[in-house]
Length: 327
Image 1 (cartoon, rainbow, N blue to C red):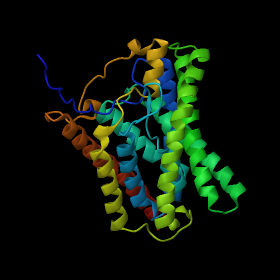
Image 2: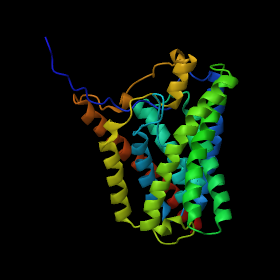
Image 3: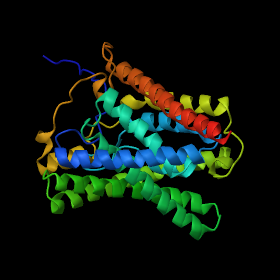
Image 4: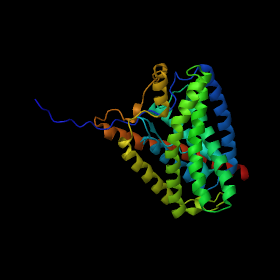
């Protein structure tokens, strides 16, 4: 008997970051310590450098990056990649505020959505929030010097910064896997580097697209010394609308494994992954909602709002302390 085909809705976006079990306890602790030191210094620098224009922008960018990371895009050979956002955040906010933004995103992903292990959280923050931002900053600034203020420097610099941030962060992850004894360096480094060299192209194109839109509409955002606040409520509303829109289309994300998961499958260490200690909103699907697409959308909106609030709170606390110290 013939049966009509059954429509299977797209599954929720897959977890994307290093889970517990991939890294040894010793390596995880070392990168927790390193990340905390860098975060402490970043907070100090933001306390000194944060301008009025950056306060709303930190929250808006955090929300957009969180929602954007839910949209995995297919790369090749059954693999997917996702936005990192380090280059965009660094270009618009500077490196220290960008580190805090990425930390808010990665931290909420681990704590609430079980994306990335708690023990491995220090390494995930280091790879994406420290390495990704540092590489993006130095690459972009170098190209800007060569461009001497010409507009092509923004777009070429943005693409190369986006690509480099993904590629170098993946090599850092590969070396952490090697130090942990999970996969030898001569296996992990070329595997991670090769697939993320392709994923980085997507990151670069997304970065250029975002920069082109902002360059056409709010060119003042690229001026680090701009004294005017960034658009007030308009920026808040526009940014949150973009984040919500990204969350709404998140069920369309590629269901292929991301670069790290693909390498783990290919190289035979996926089975060392440990289950999370607890679950709140696992796999970016809000519990209690029967429709999987709706569960993903609601989880994405909730996550974007939480990340927006946390990043905004950090920005305002640091800004208020700076103002109090100056009185």
